[in-house]
Length: 264
Image 1 (spheres, rainbow, N blue to C red):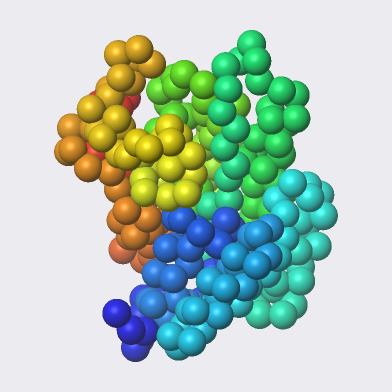
Image 2: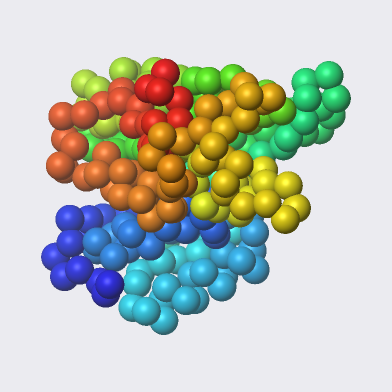
């Protein structure tokens, strides 16, 4: 698919975090295909540059920006840099995340703190800086990529699930505060998706079959649709919620997990 002339995001600047791979990369590409100028932010410099170069070669307007969400309060300066260089941010997609696995009784302090530094705290500082500018302009859309693990307990995923739950509820609270300004804030909560993070959950030599069939031992259901999502399928949901097609939708959490959490 090539660039869509007159796409629904034409003339808009979109900031996508976690854009070097997985769902973030798919979302950045999809936004650019639909006409947006995309600032793709990630801390993986080499992977990000490669991704951006590939998309630019295909004629897509994607600008790479290396930054770490764990930088905390420094992210306000990053947002200022983006707006001075490329213009007002109309769409923010919070896609950056880290996953640390381990039982609560064995989880290291470093793993717990980085989970929140990136998945929650960094998201707060970046989103706050963007929201302040959107509020003054009285327009914009924010989509946070959460996880179905934010709503359903997972063995060995306490840090990730707790941080994602915080990010999701933060986005809903923000949406309530910004609704009077016409700014919409929504969450997309994927389940198992074919990304490098998902493959981190698979033991050596295994594939998606264990995810599809579930595990009684880990108290995990399988996936009723008998397939895992692609990053592009999740990206389509993000695009919908960021677009004018969803202009009367805010504070929503769209679950994309093939029925794995039975709508919980």
